[in-house]
Image (cartoon, one colour):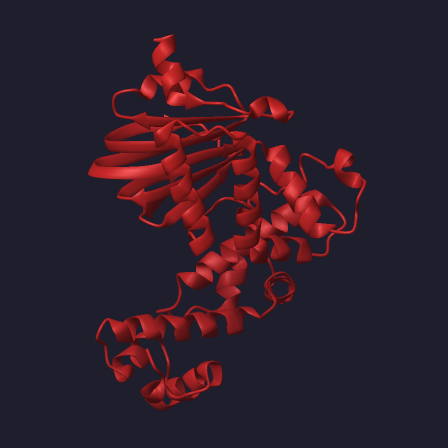
Length: 313
């Protein structure tokens, strides 16, 4: 059994760095090798047709689907991670369920030591500090900051597909930790807007910033779900346990625009998706809660620079 485990794991070159990274490939026939993982950093490609399991995130965990569909369940929500998408969770999520049902699915799972993530965040926030790396707080990272589902950008997608090839080939000789460094760099770049939003909140206490950010993300989610309804800002603010004024002020401070403008832009973006699905502009205006087609056209032009009838889709 130990020989089989060694054949599926790569740790070459890790002795050059203080940390290490295990690289392995898992399929339906060798899932038992997961019990052998000891490193804080791990790159693991997966090929599975049927799976039901409970996972316990370690550090910052990335779940990427190259082909197929993986469904995760935690915090009373389903996350359907289809081809080209990834899910980020961290160790504040004690456990989550994953299901693959009858669809051959290629995936990439990466565990990253949270201290490395904090190091990258510190460099983003304090690029001119050359000597502070030894005093980086492990809790610089908010639990909510990296719990999200997203579409992988071109560079990140290319890197993760490269990880799959490396894991399957079992022939990678360079330090695996360097792959982790590459991944962290791209993750910070892709999530820079959210990171910047979090640190835009002006609070004296870390715990206050974390709680306010959690509430504002909830408010943003409520707005995202209200594109087709006549929801008032008072209702959104109440869902966040904030007054209307405080919700407005903090939302703008955090995300750079008011709740109204955020919702306004989301509706215009949604209108273009609906047009591609074959709906008329009149149907779209009505569905998105505009008073009439003229009001919708005026709003569309304000955001896109052209009326909807002339905008190239």
